[in-house]
Image 1 (cartoon, rainbow, N blue to C red):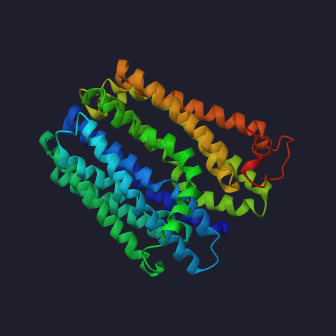
Image 2 (image 1 turned 45 degrees about the vertical axis):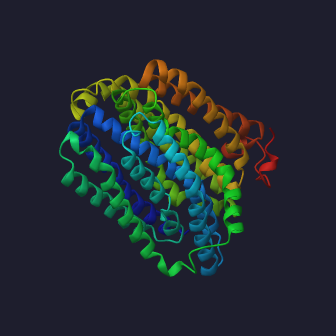
Length: 429
C-alpha cells in the first residue's frame, strides 16, 4: 500500500491494458473483414454468452476476495480465501452450464451448432476461474501483467494463423478456448505455493456466495444483462443487426475497461485508507472521478465526431449500420464512470453495498423491460437505447440514495456529516 508501490503496480497494470486495448483494435477489423457481418455476428453472439456465464460464475467474488485478501493477517488466511473462492466457483458452474444449454437452444445462431455452443459455454466457465484479483491483492501485479500479455499474444497468433476465410468462423471459439486454458494454467502455476488444499467446505462456499450477493446484484445484474445484450439480440434479430450492435458495444466496453486496471490497484488502496484517514480517501476518490469523467466526456465527443468516417474505413462495407448505434451508445461512457466511481471507490470500501444492490436491480429490470420491445422493433438501435436507459436509471437511483443518506455531502465535503456510517443499515430507503 505504499505510494511508490501503488504507482509501480498501476503502471504495470496499465501496461497490460495497453495490450488489452490494442488487441481489440486489431482483432475487431480483422474479424469484420475476414468473416463479414454475418460471421462476425456469430462471434459476437458467442462471446456475449461466454462473458455472461463468466460474470455469473464470478458472482462478485473478485471484489470480495481482493478486500478480504488485503486485510488477511498471514499466508494461512490468504490460502483459505483462495481455496474458498475456487470451491465456490466450481459450485456455481453447475447452474451456469444449465443456463448456457438453455441459451444455446433459444439462439437462432447456435441451436443448429450444438458443438460450437458447448465450446462457448466452456469458454465462459474457464474465464471465471481467473485469479488476477489474488495476484494483484498480494502485490504481484507484474505477474498478472505478463500472464495477460501472454494470453493476448497467444490468442492473436492462433486466430491470425488459422482464421482466413468466412468459412473459418467455426474455428474461432476452439482457438480462444485453448488460449484461455493455457493462460489459466500459467496463473495457477504461479500461485501453486499459496494453496493449502484445493477444496473448502460447502458451508464456506455458501457463506462466500452470501457475502458476495449484494455486490453481484449491484455490479453483476446490470453488467450481466449488459454483457448478454448482444446474445439477447441474436434471439430477436438477424446476424447483421447483431454486428451493428456488437461492434459499438465492444468499443464502449473497451473504453470503460480503461477503469479496470486502476480499480485493481486503487480500490484496495482506498479501502485501506478508509479505515485510517477518511478525508484523504475521499480526496483520492474525487481525483479519480475528475480524471476518468474528463476522459469519458472527451472520448464521447471524439467518437461522435469521427464515427461516420471511422467505422466504414476500419471495418469495411456492410457495417455502416453501426454508426448511429455507436453515436447513441457512446453516451454510456460518462454515465457509467459516475456509477463506477460512486460504487467501487466510495460505497464498496465502506461495505455499504445495499444501495448498490437496489440501484443494480432496478437498472437491470428497466433495461430488460425496455430491451425486448425496443430491440424487437428497431434491432440494434433499440437495444442501444435500452442500454442507455438502464445506465441512466442506475445513476439516478444511486445518486438520489446517497443524497438522502448524506453520503454525497461526505464525499464532496460540502458541509454534510463526515463520519463514516457504521454499516449499510444506516442508508435510509
